[in-house]
Length: 180
Image (cartoon, rainbow, N blue to C red; front, side, top):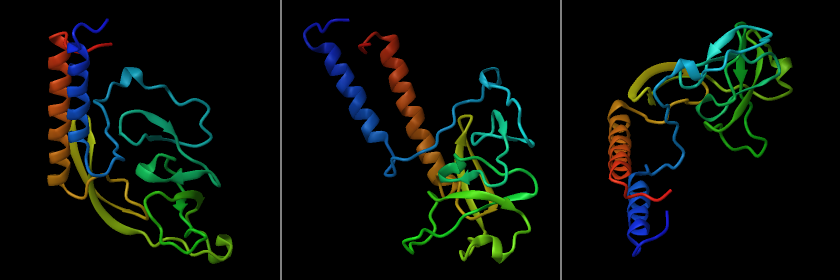
């Protein structure tokens, strides 16, 4: 579509401004869309078991011994049964954050297997993520939080921002005010 009097461009700028205003303070967010299992690819040739992916919709192969795991939102996957995700402290001496990627190790490892590094001490962490358009909250024992939001209230606030943004976008599309 060509610009006619700049109206289309103005509508696009409004959309950009609304999107920027609705972004949470933290620009890294995991937003899971409603689950459509028909779009899930079936895991093939898994050497171990299968686990649910980070959004809780599609299945994926569980990570095996010496494979990467964890990371922010658990993007690097979950370890198979009998294994745990061991996260070693960064070499620069910084503390462990939710960004650290671990390695799947035997659940009953000993200090000799850690090559002089201490594992992280798992704690119970409570938090929430947006899954299938709803705030899902849980408490899990882990080294790094897979949660984007610390509580139900902050999750609901983000969900409302997303709903407003989507409603605005859909409204402008149906009125033909956006350029593509």
